[in-house]
Amino acid sequence: MKEKKPKKLKLVAHKKKQYKRFTRSKFANFVFVSILLIFGLFMVLPLIYSIVTSFKPLDELLAFPPKFSSHPAQLYGAAQSVG
Image 1 (tube, rainbow, N blue to C red):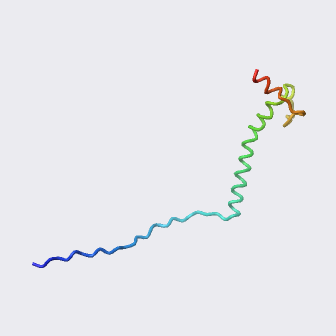
Image 2 (image 1 turned 180 degrees about the horizontal axis):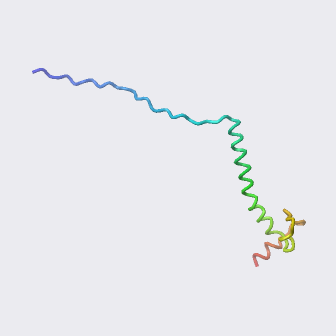
Image 3 (image 1 turned 135 degrees about the vertical axis):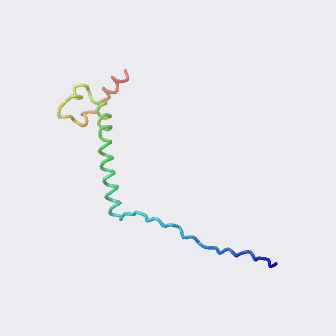
């Protein structure tokens, strides 16, 4: 009886699937980051306003039109909140 020779395995390099990377141009990245910064600053403004308002005297708190800062800057509102 003849002995069977073992089959030689062929080494096949499998190609990896290449996924398409979505890249933007430098100009599009600049526009995207600029829009994010504008919206980020817009969302931080109420926090800044509330911090600035805490340093205003009581008569300026409900003044209309509201002023962004009082002149001169005082710690009256912060001292009252502490006690």
